[in-house]
Length: 279
Image (cartoon, rainbow, N blue to C red):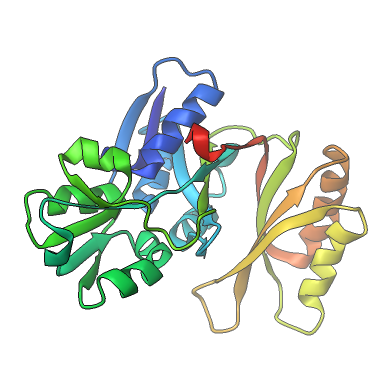
């Protein structure tokens, strides 16, 4: 099975892809690195791979907006499984810590280490990259550049570990989704969907959310994203716990549909949370 992920080698996405493949009992996955989260989703939508792994939410920085936007643009995709991966960032480089004047990484990783960087490298310029492993690749051989990335990235790109761990919050973790094509199922402990409403008027969102509430469906997450069409128009992404099976969700969707301009149901799926010792 060909699985696309945010590359290059050494990203947390690659770690998640290997873990998710094992959970799906895929013996010999072929991992296909992509240059961005949208590129990962596009590779799956265009049939250039069989599955894709994308980060959807971080416990510190919240939703990964590029993933949410890409999912909305490709409602034909389905969520097959989720994995919560502990994130432990390291500062990697080829020179001494005191000589670092530029720090490169994915914007989410830089934000997750902002306090540490402000205290230890207050004058260093922070430069965003497409992924943590791409940052590691770019700083290889430099005496003044360092990357925020994983210990695995240090091995992949021949870098020294200058400091570890450097994330501001010890319990930092990211939820990754394994995406596929084909028929969605509503049989699973967690379901994801997104919707936009017909009109921005008082009580419209409350009416929509009531479809879940009076059926005992607990929302474990709700997040809004601009529709990109006009100011004040939003898309709402919701995760629901299905403790009573799929029937309450099916009823809620039927009630919710007339209230929505667009409704995308990404399916129900199992979720696995790794302990730090397993990561």
